[in-house]
Every structure is written in structure tokens, then in C-alpha cells.
Image 1 (spheres, rainbow, N blue to C red):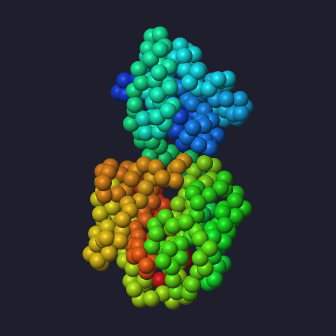
Image 2 (cartoon, one colour):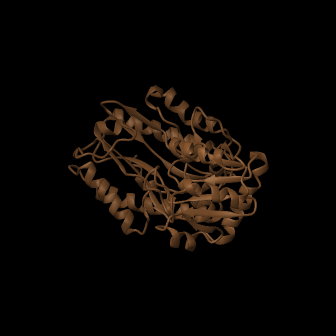
Image 3 (cartoon, rainbow, N blue to C red):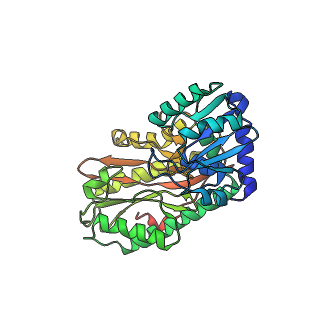
Amino acid sequence: MNQPVFENRLSSLRSKFDSLEVDTIWITQPENRRYLSGFKAGDGQLTESSGSLFISPDQALLLTDSRYTTQAQEEAAGFEVITHREGVINSLSEIFDRLKTRRLGFEGGYLIWDLYEKAKEKAAKHSPAVEFIPLPGFVEEMREIKEPGEVEVLGRSAQLIADVLAQVIEESRPSQSERDIAWRIETLVREQGADGVAFPPIVASGPNSALPHAVPTDRRIGEGEPIIFDVGARVDGYCSDMTRTIFLGNPSSYLKDIYHIVREAQGSALESIRPGIESTEADSIARDVIKKAGFGDFFGHSLGHGIGLAPHERPALGPLKQEVLRERMVFTIEPGIYVPGKGGVRLEEMVILEEDGVRVLTTSENFYPF
């Protein structure tokens, strides 16, 4: 992403200050930090941050430690990089003075309790005292609508994982272990030039395929049983996500029926989703197909989720949270049926919503066995 992209994002963020009733915003969530600044460092754990952004109407600061100073200076060109010596908490007074902070907005859905308590105590002792204002997912909302550059990278990420999965399916044979195939996926993703996998690959066979988020095991794949592949790559920071269910051999008529139901549910959603539709309605389109077929109790997760810098982000396409789907949102459509003891089927496409409907980014018709 070039510098004007980040300048536009900062400008958009600053336009929200009045409605949010803050004069400074503190960003610690890694994907939000990267989205606003271009700083790519990741956080190994919640208690160890590689950096914080402090943004006011006229200043943009990136606070980090000496491990990341050079990287921050190279990647976050629009930010003044400050290297702290004694941690972010002990630097807050200096930041508040620099930015004339009185009302500090922070990411209420991300900041851990211990850091929040320490920061709030430091803010209360500051003169004048600084009020902490928890903010909704306002940066996550900005990230929902993908810019042209983001769409291009997401398309490359989707194509890469589709190519990798095509090769893995071509190579798959009965008696291989789930774990070995998962490792093969990770290896190929790296060899194809990705940053790495977007999430640990799911390879679930036989009864394990009835577990929506199964962890690959040493189980050997048998003939005629379902194998769910749920895989994703990360390219230039952006994630892809796709799922296929295949059979090495001839499956039972019961599993074939389940497969066709899931395929129909997914196809109905792909054909029906348009800009302006509610996310809950999109979910219902596919869910109703599965319910009418008698498997409603075996589809327990949402139809899909947004995808971008994170493998799961807004919007959520499910039965609970209602949101209007808009053009240039990128999300998944992934209905499934999971019958304990017998197996499951999930099919997932990654799509972008355009003026006349969705466009599939994970094109791979040859992955459908029937």
C-alpha cells in the first residue's frame, strides 16, 4: 500500500473524532495498527505489544521499543516514531502532554484488563486528568469496505491457496495421515511465496469431519469417507480462506445426500446475496435449505465472516447480528452439516460483493466431486 492510502485512512479516522467525543485515539490491536500506519510487526501475545498508535487531530505517533524502532521508521512513514525505555505505561504522561490529551479513546474490545487498569491509573494522576473513553469497533468498521489495492492482494491470496489445495487434493491418497497432509499444505503455502498460512490448516477425515474446527491428528484416511480441508494463506498481510470436502473413493448415499444439500445451500446464497441485503437474511437463505432437508440441528455455525488483514473480521453473516452488506465487502460463504459419528461436509468460498452480486475469488470448480 502506498503512502496516500494511509493518509486517507488517517483522514477518515480523524473525521470521526467529534462523533466519538475524543481528542486522542490509542490503537493497540495489531491489524488495526497495520491498517492505519503500515507497521507490520505482530504481537506474539496479548501482554507484549510491538507498538501503540496515538492519533490526535494534528499528530500521529507510533510508540514502540528498541526492537522495532528501525522497522517502524521504515514502514510507518506518516508517523513520528518514539522509542520508549520503560514501557508504554510510563510513557503515557509524555504522550498526553505532547497531544494535549483530555479524552482518550481506546479499543474497548481489545485492550486487556491489566493494561487498562494501569493506564487508567496513570491517566487519573496526570494533570489535568485524562478520561478514558471505550470505543466501539470503529477501525474494524473502516476495514469492512476494501480498497482496490486490498482487493487485488486478497485475490492473489485466494488464488494462491486455491492452487495449493488443488495440488494437495491431487496428491491425496488413502492411508495418509491428517497431520501429514496438513504439514504438506503449510509447506506448499510457503513455497508459493505466501507470508505463511492464515490459520492452522484443518484436515479432518471420517468421524473427525463432524468437528467443525477439528485439529489434524495421526488418523489415517480411509476410502469413501469425507475429508474436510479448511485452509488459508496470508499474502502481504492479507488472508484467504476456503473449504472443500472430498472423498477418496465412493461415499455412502447418506454422505452424498448431505454433500448435495450443502452444495445447494451454498449455491442459493451465492446466487441471492446482493448489496443492501441484511447479513441475517443472507444466513437464512442457506440455513433454510438445510432446515428443509431435515439437518437444521447439524448446522451450528454462521454462514460466513469477513476476511482481510485478519482471517475472521467484520461483517459477520449469521443469525444473530444484523448488518447491511455493502459493495466491496469481502467475506466467506460456508454452510455445513456435521453429524456426530458419521461425518460432515463443509463448502466455503471467499467472495467480494459487487454491484450485481458476489464474485467468487476462490474459483476452483474442479474441487467438487459431484
